[in-house]
Length: 375
Image (tube, rainbow, N blue to C red; front, side):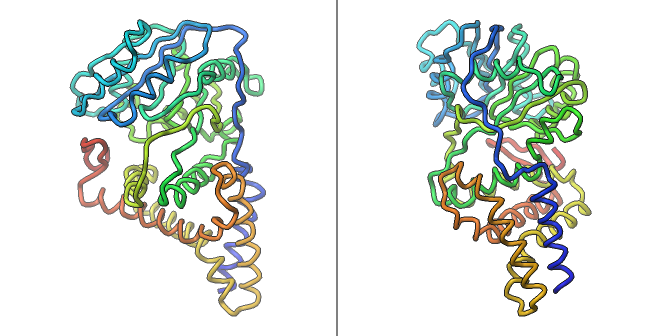
């Protein structure tokens, strides 16, 4: 017990002190105005989003941005009237374009095919990809463009992305959504993503502002057409030749509800094994690593072994401390950090379930669309 307890403690010392300070839950973009405006095409892929699309469209058309912009909504084969609801919400605004998407070609993910059609519809030098469940503060577009214009450590920014504020109202959301954000920060420390000299790359798909020429330089969306984790894939391709910025947003929030634990579990398991490149070895190593980080400290703490208990206590304290900034971001009490081992178990089970689904040949599914094993 002492040996694995020491391993857990060493892991937490590394995570807390040397892993890009992921736990700080920053940076967050403050409202800003760009020194110069550029035309922007806002592309919204939407499939069966009747519940959320109207306020999304209204929030985009209400942007307080001095430059020209259009909202191009790509209705990706919706069966619930999403496109018609969006058009009514636009109330005849000439800046709104409704594009009925064509059939998805083989090899394309649904979202990327919708984005590809939206990109082709416009000519603006800057593109904003945003999801059909994200409501935007009127200052948001101006703030994103202002950040894109500001170099990162002397390097021109080609992509600005934000982790928008996720819905956190139901009991399941309060328990698991802050942890989702926290684990994402742990997987992709934002400070490393934002360092042009570091190879870590990531984006959050709800908000991605990108230069058209940078997208073309990376080969366009065609080069990543089958990617299910499209945001991280896009950021990785862009960072090969430019700089990216990833932060948190105080000006955009998701209104997609996850009312039940099963809803959040499905979100996690949809792409968890994809993240591990469909590797059984990586899956095993990941589950062992998660067990050492999250399960060993509380077990060691009550093991009766004094040395193991001390290691478990220090590791547990570091875990609790590291979760506090994310809990404050979502208005949750500090004591939620005590549930991290149980929350981690949920994520571990969902990851294993993702692998099982792949091995059974069912693959990933979203919005009544099955991508098959391996995407």
